Image (tube, rainbow, N blue to C red):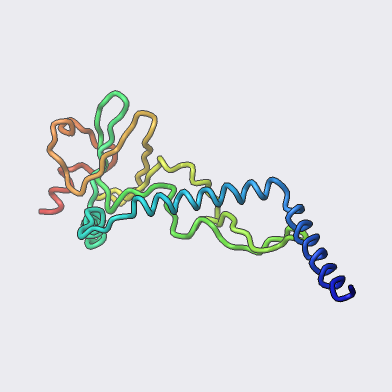
Length: 196
């Protein structure tokens, strides 16, 4: 009888521990686990039915390489920024290099730091300062700045609210741009004279 009592007691204790451990997980955790399993299972089924195809040519990579060849091979390359306002009228800037959005930074926007959170301290990812020593919210992405092509003057413009811009690496002779007014110090004619 003693031989049966010890294994039986051990089995009952293990069962009680297992039952107690699963009972402590709560419905919320169990629901999350079910949803996670459902998502993974669904993804696996979709991949099995519709696997990603491979290609022999990537037009996206070709276009990215075209961008690199256009903008990253020639220092001081000019950009022509045509801006259309809400009434349909056009103006333009001629810049050295590309216009840059306020959302672009030379540094990563987040930094890792040690956080003191009481008993749960650890590493945190927090917003890092910009190069000018301030903290930017990355909400002013519709504001752009650049360097005027002939004077070197700082130029800033914004888009949105029924105002769009079109960027080219050469002046265009399209009908809609014929009456475009210079919005900065440089005029297309001035730049053409400098190139000659």
